[in-house]
Image (tube, rainbow, N blue to C red; front, side):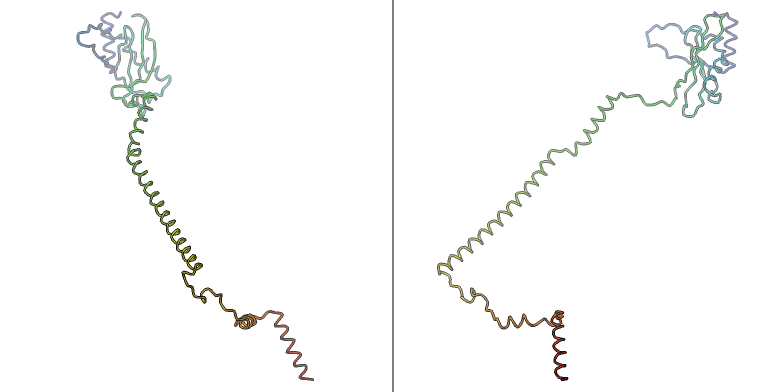
Length: 247
């Protein structure tokens, strides 16, 4: 252990370095706790040793000023340095030092980056099974409005009504056709039985006029071109007539 003079010297060195103690939370009321260990003055003054340990893995511009210390036990102490890296506000570099006894030199146990009271932290991790359960509940709640049974029943009723109307229309058409068939059958039966008189001119086929038909077939339509063979024959006939006249 350090003597009284060493304790005074260590406290003076720590004060010069600007290192303050970080107090731990006290135990519950009524519970007797063990007295906290006193800070090792030599470890408290080993700011340069702690900073050299940090420089082994992080640049000097990421290490700020000392902001405090934690007494971990007898001859065991952690020095805290401000972290100046962007994205880590409120975080501290922590270097834990120890000595075997009051005569040995400080040694570095570990270095780490730890969050402070005002550090920006990630949200608490939620297991995948819990997140999946919450997701399923949210999906079920959001789909309630689209699976209302009453709406489905109303839609089915509307479709049934439309189908019934179509069936009724088809039945009406079939009845009309049946009625027409019955009327025609009655008329035909009355004609055959002689109950219904029909004008003979109505039943007679249209008169044919062979002469007019032949004449109409022989005369081409006005403006219609003559067939090539008929035109050539007519030209030859005219030439023969002219030859006969010249003779």
